[in-house]
Image (cartoon, rainbow, N blue to C red):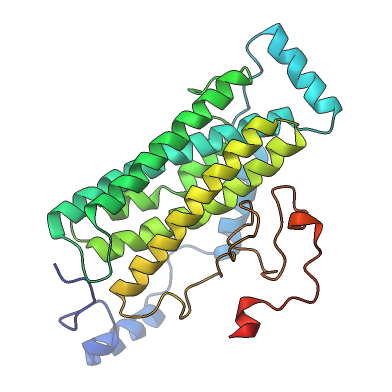
Length: 290
């Protein structure tokens, strides 16, 4: 299967229809909508449903009295135990979904093969294994905090809904390896951002061990993002540095440095503080040096 788009028959546009296209536009004036109103009526209905809605659910409470006591202590020190558990559930749901995406990507690779500069089967399998590891890490963390890793938290529910279109791309037999990688890229961008937020919440709650595990996972996810970006760029016949999206952090910057942040000249840790106590002032960004 070809990786790049090819020119050929495409009847979706109106320009190629000539006179028929003009007649179709004219028909919209001759036969107006049969019901009154406009898009504002749709908006009013949406508002009514939103005001009557009950939300995406609630985060389950800790399972034991001891765990409830731990959560209370965490709250008094400035942590947000309910939000932390909600976001742990979100990452677990997303890592499970991410693993399924890479399983599907591996099938695409075996079906169509790769392209010059693209991933090998071993590359895909390596990332898939790390996604499994991240899911196991999160399951242990939720259990250690007295939570239920099988519960669907509100943030997990939201994450699954947001990413619902990605598995459709990977499972569609019409999509090739490169198109599938573009869907993977969307997932990796979200993964990098959300792991950074989770590390910040864990640090605020005083869970140093969990914070360190999150930082290690961020290192893995940053590596995944860099590889997928390079593969997509190679498939499109361009350099990964040419319009490759948000710049990656430079070597030596904190592992919790979000890939989508604007201030590229300042390395920051998981709590949002400048790495190593430096303000970063006076340093030029990578874009300015080029």
